[in-house]
Length: 232
Image (tube, rainbow, N blue to C red; front, side, top):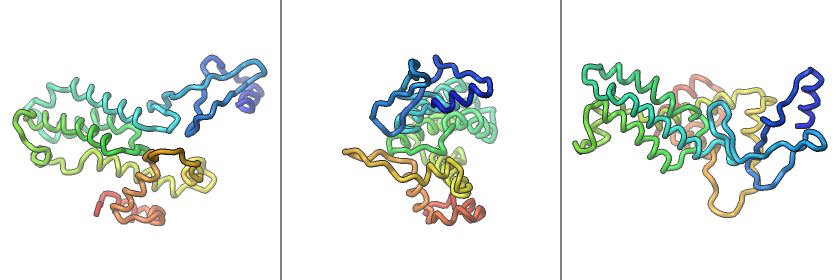
């Protein structure tokens, strides 16, 4: 940080120390970052970067919960459109893709979804599908039937997984000196006691296994693209 500060000064740039914060990822240790001998930068537990919440564990459940809440708000604001039987299903599909799923799935390429988070994300999807189909929970119609009526066999989780695999494919094909690839290949830190957290790397491996994909397949764009959506 001090090196950056010095380099910026050489170019006539100034760092706003009052607005500068730092986050230590995957560590509980306390650090002190000094720009000058008497100026200390504030350490935080999380911050928002490009619309996503980054915590000590990276992008985790806090960010996914934020996406879920944002999606619920959009669904509620468009309630009259979902129930409008004069709108075609094609139009409603475009609306939910552009206005709802773009909000819910923002940053989903790096999600590590637990079973509970999958359930909650799917609940948002079924909420607007049910309204679009013109049925309520009181009608006792199954989710499978609603998906059939709305011609929506692919779930929002399926699409999120495909986007994650696309990102993994891009990472794998990057030059060796690119930071994102170096971060992906960096050795894991020593694990703490207790149940291990679900990681993005493990999530991707599971999704690859369900599609019978190997790491080397990522270097063949056509093979990777063709098999990403085919779960076994």
